[in-house]
Amino acid sequence: MTIYPVIPDLYRTAARLLLERIGSLNYFSGTVCFDYGSQACRLVASIVVYRSVERSPEGTEERIDDLVPVWWEFHTCDESGERCNDFSFGELKRYML
Image (cartoon, rainbow, N blue to C red):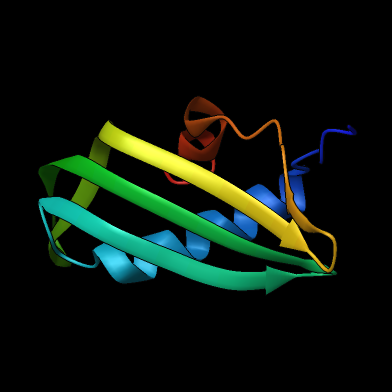
């Protein structure tokens, strides 16, 4: 069985969609589904979101300092069924912080 490689562009896509779903929450538990090429991708996660407030002359802004996964699964499926992949939550965080 061939492992499906999770490439940087796929991490960027997953990170963008997950950040949209997290919004201003401090705890996220849910699923993000999307298509990437021939793969149907599904990220299931429960994540504690740590934030800090940055103050500047323009105002205040909350930013995400850390994301701590309580649980996560990343699934990739094509017309043949589910494929194993080399997804890493640590790598995903690099595209989110």
